[in-house]
Amino acid sequence: MIEDFLNIKLDPKEIFGEVSDEELVRTAQELGWDQANMEHLENSRKDGGFRSDMYIYYGLYKGKQEGLKDTDLYSFAGLISGLLSGLHGGFGTDTYKKEEIIEYKAIDEYNLLVKAGLDPLNIARVIVEFCLEQYKIITVERQNLMPKNYTLREDQIHLIHNYTVDNGKKNDSEGLRDVVDAGLKCLIVKE
Image (cartoon, rainbow, N blue to C red; front, side):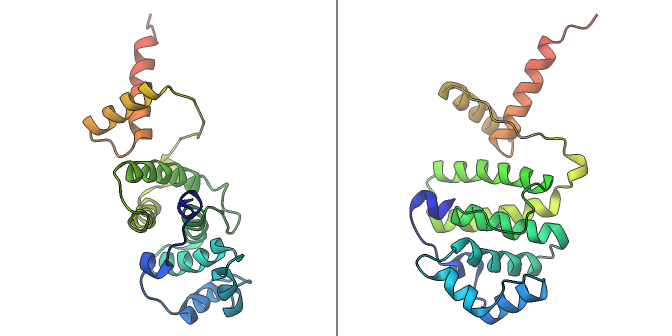
């Protein structure tokens, strides 16, 4: 998303920190990614290569280092791949409810960071850390969110954003849910 929208190529080492190619490949192989090898990693960096695959290596490494396991780990790597490159690669976890929730939150966070004027490298760093934190705190069982797309006027979007900021909400989606809840309570007539 970031590289694709802004037509740039970020240096993953500036996002994730220094890690050797050997360690990236070894980690991906240990986790069972059958495509993982040095040639595949090198090709993902070249023009015409799938940068999304390159980010999967980094996502697997970072997620494992941060203690993510099982579906959360693979989901994190795939989601980060899409958010950074614009091409969602991964392990077929895109129907994983937790990933859907985090993806919507990450897009909200991205929009706030762009609006705040952060540069692309720092946006990428914040998005990676934001997603890691979300994987650690969200449990699917307590989330009953169903992602839907609705169209709002620009003035409505500004009002929702102002409400979000004024009330200390984490993101515009949380602010919008509060406003909808309050509105629905006013509309429901109790006998």
